[in-house]
Image (cartoon, rainbow, N blue to C red):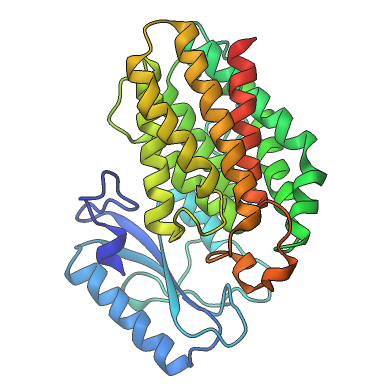
Length: 346
């Protein structure tokens, strides 16, 4: 599991380890693993981190933290530690599922005697930056307009997406999109819009923190892969390349492919149109025509999911006779693709 988490041949890494760096490790019982097996896994994880990756394991949290009914196995989570994060991690909590005793360096159960509130400052990454950062470049202004329009459209369509999701999932697709969009809207004025890569990484953090469920995970993958694509960001082809990298990340790690009745059925055709058409577009009008075609491809792809048998996600557990509407995730893609086109057109 750690080898997969630290692979450097994927174009980007989930976790880059540096010898001597301090980390916290969480070993989570998924629900049906015995304590004996959990502790064996915890020991093996610590040994691998220390002996193979040469990192300092400063804190270990082991227990049933995020579970499903009788689900076998464990999950492993790593956190790069700073003094501030360590203080927060050591803070007292009334959460009933959090282990009362975490293991410290060298197996010690002694916590740091520090006040997490006292060490918090306005310069910390968790503090809200209230400085208004107006974009000074054309690409920055265009990107801000697109993101703002996407947020507005997804929020307006919350109930529509929820209604679609009630027939194939747990009825919260729209609420999930709205939660992420609302969080992004609140940060529009402080993002560094003239640095597209940094904006996308900022969006990753907001999505991870505010969008739950599978949607949050998939959009996090999509944005992370896009942000780390090797492109200049100065032309439309760069954005098509970044979107393709994001699509590949979703299919690689999410497991969904075209025809599985997921967001990929709308995103895939749209990315195909962009990659095929934008390199030959000679002016803005032609590029906008390609984007319009991509929007139509996303809409058609979403509509085609009506006739598909679900092979991924919650819809795969639902009787096929009840799947009479488009997949909500695919419909959401069509909505934000159209929002981008509208913003750029205006």
